[in-house]
Length: 128
Image (cartoon, rainbow, N blue to C red; front, side):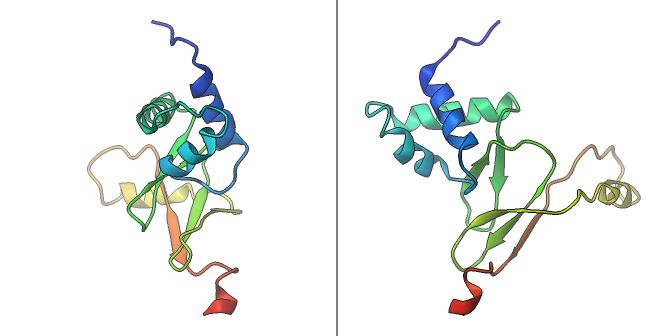
C-alpha cells in the first residue's frame, strides 16, 4: 500500500533536512508550529516515528534520555556534550571493523552498529 502524501510530514522532513542540531520531537514541534499552527505534538511524534521506520530519518539516543532526530541517514557517529546537551556530528571515517571485533564474541550476525561519544564540546570547554 502506498503512503498517502502529507504536507505536514514533508514539512517535518524538510525542517530536519535544514538542521544540524539533531532536535528532539518537542523542538521540531515548536519549529513546525510557525508554519502549521494547528499541528499537534502527537502528529509530529507519529510522523517522526514513521519517517524513522521508512529509513528517511535516524533516531539518536544519547545521555539525556530523549530521542533526537537526524535527516542524515548515512553511517556516521555523534558526540553528546554532557554540559550543554548538544548532539554533534563527528567528522570521522566509519569504524566498520568494530562489527568483526564484536562478532568474535557474539553468537549471531552483527549487521550494523551505533556509536555515540560523550564529553564536553569545544563551546563548553572555556566555561568549565
